[in-house]
Image 1: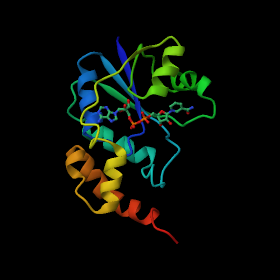
Image 2: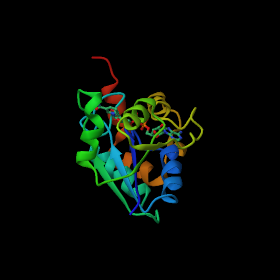
Image 3: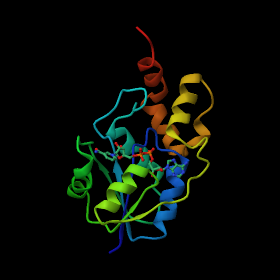
Length: 168
Ligand code: NAD
């Protein structure tokens, strides 16, 4: 059984993440998706809870052919121990897929194979840009899969972001 691991903060999950996962689906038998910084929510850079991110990913990948697991993973204080922490939380896997330089470095140092998928439209397909658009009242919906638009509406994600970004 060939399993691939993909980690992100997914604040929120967007079309770039979706394209990468569709690509990984063609390479492995099962995918493990780690929701990083699972302990963070209700911050301008990290507005959504781990549970809400589980919902976005699960719904967006409902028709993916490849089986997948979504595992929330809290951050730890020591980068040098982080890969062991990840491995203690996830089903066994042989390849990590990431384009995040720190993630790549930590996995390589632990002797795990890393593949870096291409970035899709990085200027617009980024959590930072989507949160910026939400705060600015600009259209953001085209940057995320339709099921994610529905989840964000259901949880009133934009309204939360606007409220927590306010000054008192
Ligand atoms: P992210 O949501 O920004 O990105 C997830 C992945 O998708 C990355 O590989 C990124 O390169 C890729 N991606 C982003 N936009 C893309 C696009 N347009 N096209 C294609 N791919 C795209 O999340 P991240 O910041 O990479 O998440 C890493 C997580 O690991 C964080 O939660 C971080 O805290 C955690 N971490 C924790 C520790 C620790 O606890 N000590 C150490 C290292 C990493």
